[in-house]
Image 1 (spheres, rainbow, N blue to C red):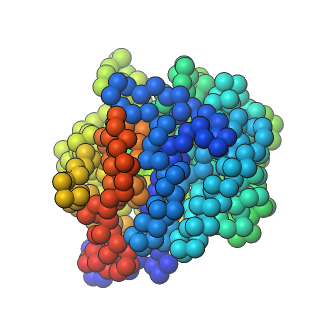
Image 2: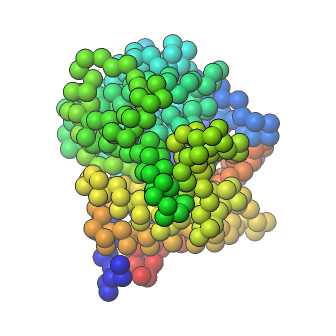
Length: 469
Ligand code: BG6
């Protein structure tokens, strides 16, 4: 549909940026912090680990000052569970509380709204050793951790995100399960426990944090059928439900998506539940939904002949197919990044419309961005026009989605500063701020504003008017 006039970005729109603890903080074993599964993750040869990351732990004030200079209205970051409770369910670490208190106070001093993710891929190693999310006791540990967070920060943090990309942890489990990759059956048991953990944290937040809002932050992406062949449409519906709607249907309605339940039964993956689980899940109601969006995916009908799952590298955005369910397809209308991720700005509008139409809750984009091999020039500049182009196209589609009636409350691109990518180390950069280090050499960790920093500063200042559509 063409509009004569577009709606403006709302007043108080949360223009922000995102990061996660283990990808930026470094100081992995300082001031009483316990180890997480990410701290022992064995990265491939030539790719950095997460131990030093962007050394934000020691540059916190400098980094927040840069956020203020950028004009950020919100900052979405995660708290490292192992800084707060080093072994996951034991003693509380005062130094960890102090670090995040200082960060939150610093943000508030600059009028930047803290948006806190409680758990972003970094399960405490001690809990992992006891079975991780496969062990129901991890639900209790998370509930207690949530209580500690709300007690200590709930007076100042009004936006909470329970679990980052639960769907990625279930569909791409390698990095979160060192030692042994769980079977699908085990993963859907983990998934059920994570649902309970998220629901219990949601209920607790509403009890403990006056004015607090809480929601999940899954990685949601519209799935397109490769052709208008109805069999492809069924495959796209199935995969969209398994990959996306399972997670949001549970968070919002407290029930298993019916297509997904049929899939779990067919495959023998149904989780063990206890009496009362479904009541807890139904009782917990999110106030808003975080949405991590990078790319759409295109699929075709399963052939169910042993060839549906293709032997190529998949990741959170690159689908590989699942036997008897769907095959990965090509979309000839869309380009890819140098890392093979589809670039689909209109897909963002499609995705936001689909989510809003299903749930009618305020949406906050908690991640979206372009990973690239940025170059620091001799004169200290970083010309990342490709990132500006990418974000500009996506911001314009967000404005169209707002015009379509989507209640979009903010946009936090990934990422505020360069950080360690989940799979491609420090070579794949996302930030508005360049961090002067590379895979092997930590250099001086200097902070350098990229061209995109100055551009985004103008976008925020003009509340999106600069986009000019
Ligand atoms: C999301 C994660 O899946 O994608 C982030 O929440 C991650 O942690 C981001 O960094 C980009 O992915 P990658 O693999 O390029 O780092």
